[in-house]
Image 1: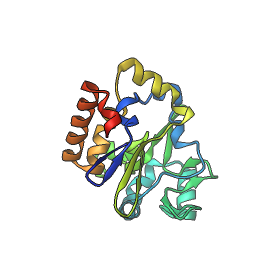
Image 2: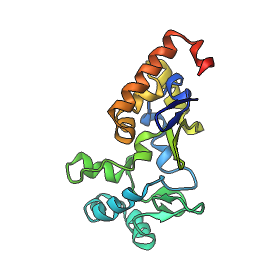
Image 3: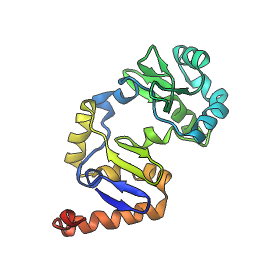
Image 4: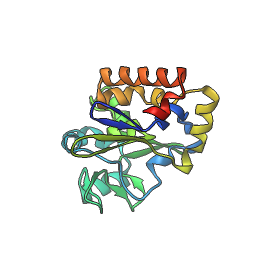
Length: 196
């Protein structure tokens, strides 16, 4: 772990490799698990605002779940998250054949909304946990992402490069440039890792 401004960052995001492999996992992260995508307060307002535009992209099951539960919910631990369909699929999930996609992102790709998707989804496999004085930036390991780890290794793409756009979206360009400097330092001098 190392500190950058008000973030504590796991070295795993610099050292581990990852590239989503939808043809192998079929977007399993959107349909597996026991909770919706984590949201922040601002994102709950965005979801309420864009829902009428996104709704035509969604499956009838997703629309039913949202209309019953709301565009966002408080999870069992009190965290804000997207609602689920029957405690499984994210309510915003749509399918292209067997592959799960994001209905919000489809509306974004067509230029109908300016918000791509929840930043937690965009950042995955990085998870950010906000505390009072800092944010913890960690690599989240999940078995369904094994194909992404294999593809990342094959293509030699570290996690932080795979989610560059999302990290800039979350922390800003200056923060990301600083992260690149740290990555270069650690690559040039692996012993430095022990001193941080």
